[in-house]
Image 1: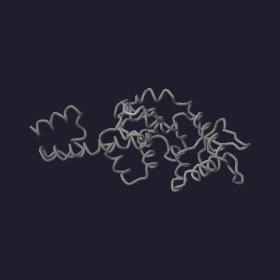
Image 2 (image 1 turned 135 degrees about the horizontal axis):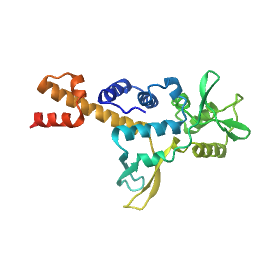
Image 3 (image 1 turned 30 degrees about the vertical axis):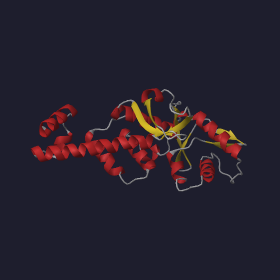
Image 4 (image 1 turned 180 degrees about the vertical axis):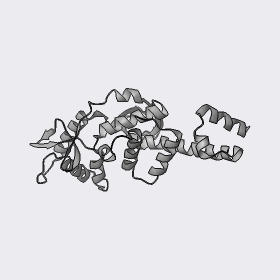
Length: 246
């Protein structure tokens, strides 16, 4: 994995500025794994994608993931903090990828329910159901996309969907990162999902905007080019900015 340089962070942010979140996640993966074909990244199981993006966050922004949520019962603002390295310990063994039917597919032990086999969902699968607004229909479409064998659509009960979802979660623990929360004000306990793609992108965007402000300030003061400013180490750039602002 390659950590993002200052110039790389700016380039990544600029390329992904108007993209869908799914594409931003793949773009970040491509920057971290430049030798891996982009099409292959789209076929990584979601847990593998999330683990790689968590690792990228640790390499570029530190292992601490923190944020704020509101209690759904009383509205109290709560802060949370997670250790990215600890999250990575929950990563399941990587699933090998094998091309089937013209596209990359996840090889390995399938999930079998009602005599039908399913593989783990990927970014490509999520993209195919991204425009579906009804949650149950989206779940069914995702299920059908993950069918290993071709066949007619089946009738799926809520119990079927829940069972398959639970088994997919067990087979790919990092596909959904859950945070256990406890409100100190009202005592309500609940869980939230951490969208690592969105979280990482907020960090990338914040760093890109800080870098652009630094470039503007130092270019105005010293006449340096963007490349010259971005090539400065963090301590030297901070020192120059301090002298300019003084």
